[in-house]
View 1 (tube, helix red, strand yellow):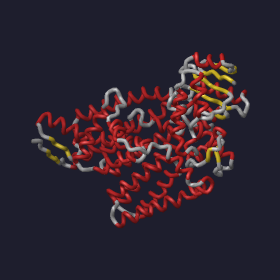
View 2: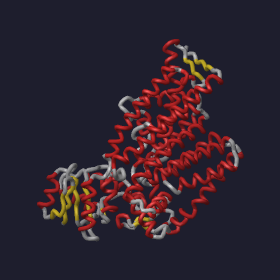
View 3: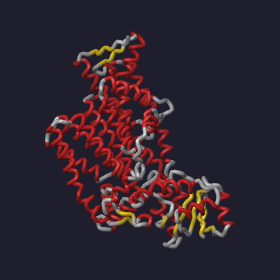
View 4: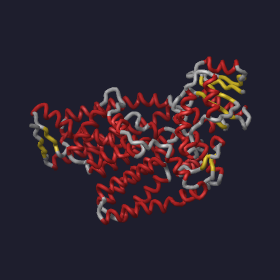
Length: 520
């Protein structure tokens, strides 16, 4: 029969060691974590992947005297200017100082993403009341290749901003429910409002998180009153923005954007994400699974519900919360289950050291440093992968040529061969850099297509897989596309495809090492 033993250690000898251990791990996490988040921007020299639509919206805001326009000029398609505007105001004010939109969308996301590191530490410390756990969780969070790419992209101007306020708001929401007072409630209202004004997905996750926190920590009369005040205060503070948008475009504008998320519940997606591996040696994944056992054993069910509930509300946003949950689980697993597992190998008894005696174990502490060093190396390698997820010189050159030479009423169909058109940087940046309409660009249409958004996404994905002229013309006809030019990426699309268009009367007007532009 398995025997569980909880051991206590003397506090005074442990205190100094714990402080030194915590400071060391946290220092490594922040120092190297900031570096691996800035390195991709240094290597890329251009905003990573997306950001073209935001560049135009920043220009629109500045050109309208910092008054929210009714529509954005992006892609010449009358897309409502309904996106949360805080990031655009920051970008527009920075442009007034002479900073180019390229530098804004390249460096501000990197800096904002770096700020998530100390904020994450304070968040974990608040919800766990365990400094060593918070420090180690921050290290696992800092060195999780792939988790921070979404924030580093050009669109990170709003995403990273939203995540910063998301973490900060949850710190004060949790504090309000645990020890209710009106000062922390006021901060919670302000920070929740800033989330809403920064990013729609972060706002949705904040609502979900606040509900979970209220259920587990604030279901008292006073806690419920504070929760109501936070909700009402956030609505009132953000009303000037969302009220203006609803007045101009109606409530359906937000309902349309909301339908662009994946609202289906999927245990398979959750299961796949839980066992996902981001590094060659899956240290973090193993410790995360250890942490699940520890959390269940200690009945910290709120943590799992907080992390997994988004998979049953909006799958597109779900991985954002698990990017915060998994480092916490990994820290619990390493600090508690790993020593207990090693002890079981020796004594056949499960011994949980209640006060994180790990930092007094030299062998385990040195092993942890080696693991963190390995994860840092993985992040360095991943930085070179991230660097390549940006527009090539040939892509930018092609767009500049079109802006200078193509008629303003030209319509372009772009075939890059990339099936996931929503993350295709060429499709997204083309309307910004070429200043011409692209019939195959999906960005922005989530605000106007409503239920037709996903069907358009599927159709555009099929178009990108076309191997002959008949397929492209057939798909274009099915989507009612009228275009004057077509662009091919010769690195991905077969050369015979562009040649077949030339043979059928299309005129070659531009080519470089990667792209071919044909005119009808």
